[in-house]
Length: 285
Image 1: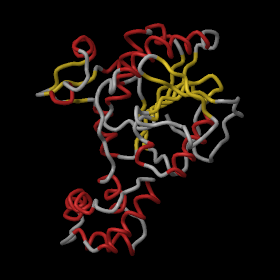
Image 2 (image 1 turned 135 degrees about the vertical axis):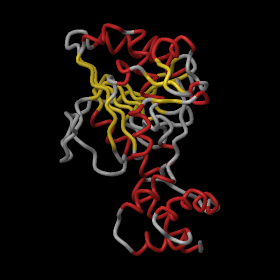
Image 3 (image 1 turned 120 degrees about the horizontal axis):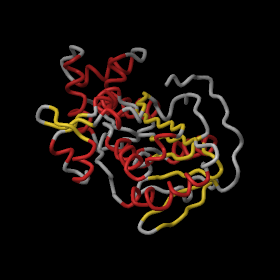
Image 4 (image 1 turned 90 degrees about the vertical axis):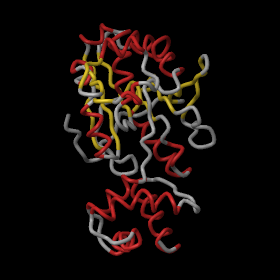
């Protein structure tokens, strides 16, 4: 892989997925793209990169982009945001929505499903009244492969050992071969959809809760600002946005205010938002 090929690929990656790959990551590109090159019959990663550079976007392009996405995740990741959801954020939202009995949730980086399933289990365990509400829970990701695993809901011992409380393991999982599978009643709570955050967004309902956790860290400032502005347009004026522990709206987008809680924080719109604007696509649920 030549420096020119590496630079060309990093530009493609940033344009198509918003992911910024800094110089010095050539070894990562080589390792991640080697299986893609073999799958498409290219003798070297360099040959694959030449194909990506001079041919219209196709299967090889998206497989290459998926290969460079990060699917690091775990159940109840960082713990404190989920405690805040259980103890403060969700009780407040449910009280505000008691009349409409409608709640719309979006997990914007589902990966292989641990985060949305964590929230689904928390909802079922701590707020059983929601089972009689009009609950819309959408979880999206850029990676088809990750979404396929998320829909399956099957996890191995290592994955289950990362953050999953034993009581939830006993209550919401069934033995499946050498792993465990999320019970159907939990899996049915979440609708997994393919979505590229830097591409066109589908029509969505007004949102009450958005989890955009550990995503912004991979983007440049302009992409972060665009995403935060888009979320702002769809979130209700009293809705809540959760970011990752290392992420913030500070010095990026001033239409948000931070609400500090014990050991965590969430964000809410600083001023009322207009009704969501159609972006021309339909979200088939």
